[in-house]
Amino acid sequence: MEDPADEFATLAEEIADRARAAELTVAAAESLTSGGIANALGAAPEASSWLRGGVVAYAESVKREVLGVTADRVASAECARQLATGVARLLRADAAVAVTGVGGPDPADGEPAGSVYAAVVVRGEVRDAHFQFEGDPAEVVHRTVRAALELLRDALPAAVADDA
Image (cartoon, rainbow, N blue to C red; front, side, top):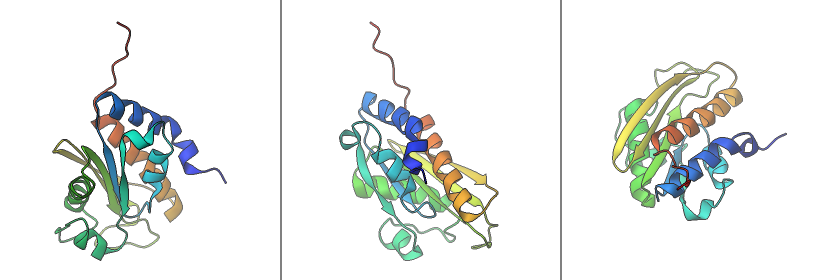
């Protein structure tokens, strides 16, 4: 089976280019993806110069006790935003991406299977997104990693080519 980091290499390289060009450090807080985002980022070029690390906050207690989540529901935009800001604060990162939701196969926390919330923070500015993915839990996780990487890439300042 192909390493998911291989499939996401182009996205991760774009993130690396943007982070290095803007001199930003990056972190990730992951629930349902269980480290898949950090895996992809860590395989990107020169990750040691811009990747601060990640926290797999699968258990609700980890979300609350380690990352400071106070949201009523852990499958929510509020929780995703708090995960992103919490991991940025904890790891002293300039930017962070976070995901939480319901991988399935059953509904949970008042949300249907495949309901995913993501957030990204860059220098204090937070944005979030909601996705509804179809498929078995492995497919939902895979699609969530891709969506989170795209959200992070799009939130980082575009790298400017050095053609001067």
